[in-house]
Length: 122
Image (cartoon, rainbow, N blue to C red):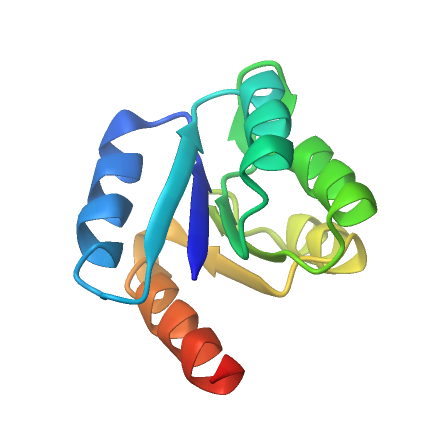
């Protein structure tokens, strides 16, 4: 399963990459720290899954989500954010996010969800 990570924090990206590379079926196909880079790189990499933050330079993760949903509608988007407010959750789910996790309390759910996606696609 090809995974792309878009988050403005290098530490968050590194932590996710470390957690996900432990799973043999996962290939990290790219990462981005800002919205323009994320949009361009996701289109190029055509991942199966995008792990996406809401707050990023150059726009917002919601902009990336909206774009991805239009051009690559089969991509599973997992929102991982420090801003788990209900209005963000609602907006992201309306725009096609499949999962919405709070970085502070649900970080560990990301690898589990991706493993479940791999198992269900086999």
